[in-house]
Image (tube, rainbow, N blue to C red; front, side, top):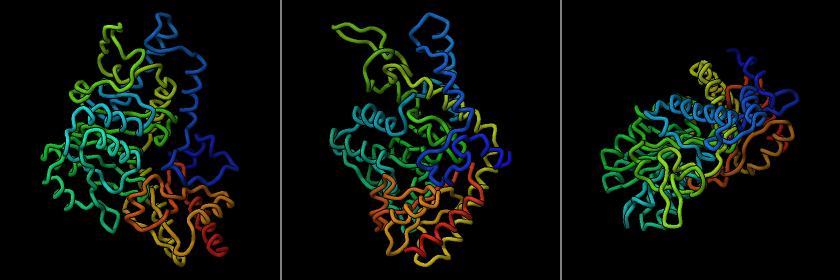
Length: 397
C-alpha cells in the first residue's frame, strides 16, 4: 500500500495538520480504530455481567480481542493475555504481584541504564519493599547495552532482569534474544518492555522465551488507556491478584474470598472494553500491511534526516542506530526546548526533554534532547520540511 493511501486513513493528518514527528510518544489512529471504538459505545453494554444479548455479544467481541492479541504475540494460551491500562500498569502489576511475592532480601534485580522510568521505578519500589537490590546494567558510549558487563552481573547472581525491547530515546534495539537466554541460564526471570519494539517488528513470545512481555495500545495505532501484559501461564497462575473488586472473584464473604482463574483474577472491575476492541482493530489493520516495506521506508526517512542534520553546525546525533525510526540530537549551546518551540511555530511536532529516561540522559551527560520519531504515515516531504525548519531555527539562534 502506498504511503499516501495510508495517510488518507488517518483523520488527524488531514491538512492543515502539523507534520507529526512524535509517534514514539503516541501514534495517530487510523479510521478503522476510531470506527471500532465508536461502535462499542454506540451499542454500549458491560461484559461478563449480563444475560441479555447486548452483553453477550460485546463479551464475545471483547474476548475475541484477547485471542487476536494472543495470535499477534504467538502466545500459547489466550489466558496469558492480561488487559491493563498500559505498559506502565503492566510493569507495576508484575512488580507488585510477581516480584513482591517472590524476591528475598539481598536478591538482585538487573535493570538496564537505558530504560524508560516505567521500567525502573516499579523495581525500585519493590526493592524497597522486599530488601532486594536494584543493579544497573550499563550502556556503552554508542548507546548500546554493555553485554560484557551484563554477563558479569549475571554471574554474580540475579533473580530478575528488566529490559526494553527498543529504547525510547535513541531507538536502540537491545539483543533481547541473547539477554533472555543468558538470564535464564543464570536462573533469572526476564521482563521485557515492548512498548517501542512491538510497533516495528513481529514478536513471538514463545520463540523469545520471554517470561513477561508488555506493551501499550496507543503507540501501536490503538487507543490510549489500554495495554497488554503477556506472562507465561505457570507464572501468572502462581501470582496473587493485585487489584480487588468485581469480576476477579468466584465467591466473596466476610469469612474470605476465592479468586477466579486467569485472566480474570488480574482484571478487577469494568475493563476498558472499547480500548481492547480498538486495539484488536489496530492489530488486525496492521497485520494486513507489508510491515517489512514499512520498516524499510522508516529507516530511509531516518537516514535522510540524520544525514541532513549532520551538515548543520553544532548538531550532535546521540547514539545513532542502524535500522531505527527514532533518534535524538542536541545542539551545543542551545536549549532543547528552544529548538522544539521554534519547530512548533513552523508546524513541526517533535519531542523535547528527558523522555522519561533520566538515567540515560545522565549517562550521556545531557540535560535533555530533541527526539524525532517516524511512523508509517510520514513521508520524505515531512523530512524536507523538518530540515528546512531546523535550518531556520538554527539561523534564529
